[in-house]
Image 1 (cartoon, rainbow, N blue to C red):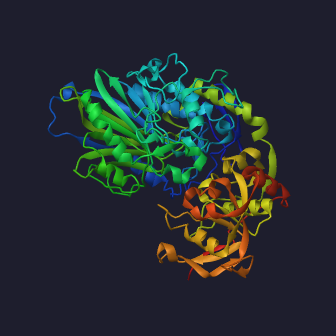
Image 2: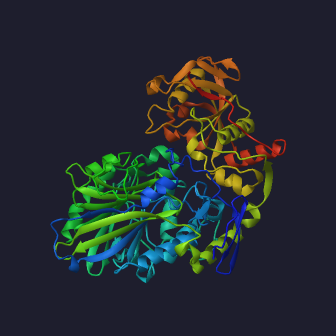
Image 3: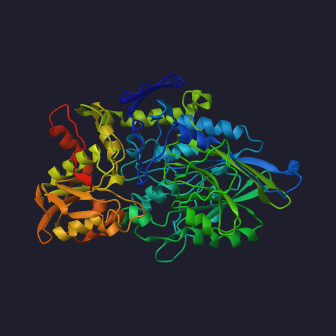
Length: 614
């Protein structure tokens, strides 16, 4: 039982039904001002309360409600290997963790007359804390397998991932209670590794916890990821489930901009199609099978605006990146389980024909889930009632008091496996070093990382993308696991030469060509920018100083970036033109070495490297 948690401790020690978990450095100790996709996180007591207010819709023309088949869809998104509980600073309480999360889902399913289908909307793995990442994220898939029912399992023969005949895959059994889709982070290590995690096989550095790792025991679906050479789907586009005689289709998708936020090698060989067009393409095929109830699970989302009142039954176009997708979805789509933004959505959004689609998103890291009640009329085979609330998975109340013991044992095993490396102390921080940005976009953690990278490569400048900064460092002993959680991608550092003119273009690309601003973290450079100016004019070129001297557009400067950025990641395309490239150490090693070189206890602060015009 989770009897208590100590907020400031650097290592999680919890009693899980008699299982003592001497945990790795806890990634839960993170401030949630900015998520890792570049969007501002709005998470607090008001947002949690608003998310939990049930949104409700019923077909006024439907009759005989006593005959309707009722069940639940339990959705979640952006798990990111968060096997251990996460501290929510606004509440001074813990939420989630795989064992607690499993207990909540099991309790919700048990409360439903005809059970539940569990749906995840991508980023189950990737950008994970060491307890999952060091084991190649296999424990995060094994955890989901523990939620899968007996119909999801079965012997699977080895097959070419492009082979036909997937309908024979036992994971596609309509009575299997679980379905997922891929997010952008499933592609972090390339398509082959993504497919290995899904289909099974031993990693080159394995085996890890499971000597016979056989992948996911449930289907992953995606309609808009196709092989570049053939145009055929990499994964099944959809799966049809059956509950109490009624059939429901689940179609998967991931944001089409995935190639702009993943290293090019990660998406080599595949293409990402327009989400709505790809989803709609399969609806006629689904309808020919007599299925009218259709759910989309998609790794794309939004940040819902606030509203007043205990419930929200009015149509609400909450916009964001998912807004145009919802607008273009076929009228047959009833529910969308969303993700990617690490925030909440619980709204009835109209498509362009006025069809109200229930759209949900449950924050991130298993700190909440979508509790969606569904009713199907057997006569029309369509969804005639749907409602949702976002439930926070507190560890100190309700199902959180009785974590799933089998899942707890898995987490304890993973924690024990990584503890010797993760718990090694590499320095002492004099205070919290946070990734949260000031109004100009500068952060203390960003400055620390950029300084480390510049020193490692001996360059004039260094730039760090904000999406690669995954956590804070809290005051006190800093362990290897803490630093890994900050930078878990194992990107190489790359030294290159850029002209002053190219550096000016790089700074401009923080806004130009971006869906949202991406303010780079810097070392060796100072500048001002004007938020009121157009995207291509925001940087005050006259204010740019490189090591205290005005920038010379014709001069050549040495620059350090990580390999993701060097390949044009996050739409910083000018970096692909950098010359005289030299590959350096892994970013994690550079940061550890830099911390160890500093006078102890060490610190970092916002220094005015980036400023707004007055």
